[in-house]
Amino acid sequence: MTHPHPLQLRLPVFAAPMFLISGPEMVLSACKAGIVGAFPTPNARPIEKLETWMQNITEGLAEARETQAPNTLGPWCANLVTHSSNTRLAQDLELIARFKPPVVVTALGSPKPAIEVVQAYGGRVYADVINLTLAQKAVKAGADGLACVCAGAGGHTGFLSPFAFVSAIREFFDGEIILGGGICDGAGIAGAIAAGADYVYMGTRFIPAHESMAPPAYKDMVLNSNIDDLIISAGVTGTPASWLKPSLKMNGLDPDNMPEAPTRHYDSSTEFSGKKWLDVWAAGQGLGTIRTRQSVGEIVNQLASEFETAMHRLQTLPYATRSFT
Image (cartoon, rainbow, N blue to C red; front, side):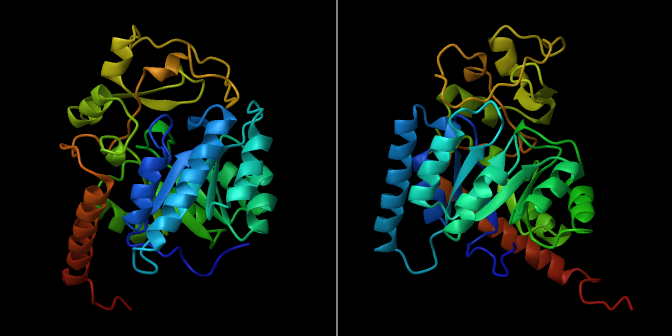
C-alpha cells in the first residue's frame, strides 16, 4: 500500500522522534511550524502518561486549527517500538487506534503489529530500517514507507551511505522514503530530496531547542561539540548507537574501552529509574553547525531559508538546464 499524495508540509522534514528528548511540546511546535512532529511512545511512562500526551497533542492541534490557516499544520507521528521485549506494545497500539496519529514509525522490530491498526483508520506506517534485508521485509509486510537510518544518525544509528541506501531501495520500492543521518541544514534537505528521498529525519538539530526535554547540560554539550566528539558503541543499550564522548566520561565510561553489549531489552512497561542510559547522551553528525538555542519555529524558519538558498543554487548552476541527451 502506497500513498500517491505526499504529506502536506512546509518543508519535507520530520522532527525525528528522540528517546528522552521528544515530548508533546516539541511535537506541537513542530506541527505548528509546518513539519512532522514525532515522539517515541517509550518516552511516556507509565501507559497513563502516554494517554495524557496523546490527548494533549490532539487537543493542541485542534486548537491550532482554529487560528492557523488551512494546510499549514504538519501531522503528528508516534514512534512505536515493536521489539519482542516490549510487553507494552498492545497497550500502545490501543491508544494509537484511539487517537489516530496520521503517521506511525515502527522501530527495533517488524512493522507488522502496527500496519493493520494504523491503515484501518487511514494512517501511514513507516518502518525504521538500517539495511536492505530489513527494508525488503518491511515492504513485504505492507509498510507504506521506509525510514532509512543511515551513517551519521544519532542514537541507534545506521552504517550505510544515505546516497547508496536510497539508490538500492529505489531498485525495488517506489513508496515513500524518510532519510536520516547527519542532515542538519537546508542544504542537506535539498540533497536528500535530490537523491530520491521524500522526507528527511532531523534529530540532533532539535536537541537544543527550547521545547526539547533534554537537560540544559545536554543542550550545552551539543552546542559545544563537533563530529570528533562522537563514538558508536553497542555497550550502552545493546544496539549500536552514536554517543557523545564527554557524556560517557561523565558517567565513568571510557570511550576507548566500552563494555560489551548488554542483552537488548526495550520494554516500555519498566520504570526509568536506575537505567544507565538515562545520563549518557546521544547525538548525530550534525554536530558542529549548531551554535545557539532556538525555538522549534525559529529552527524551521532557518531551515526553510537554507533550503530555498540550496534549491536556488541548484537551479542556477551552469549544468542545471543543460540537456545531456
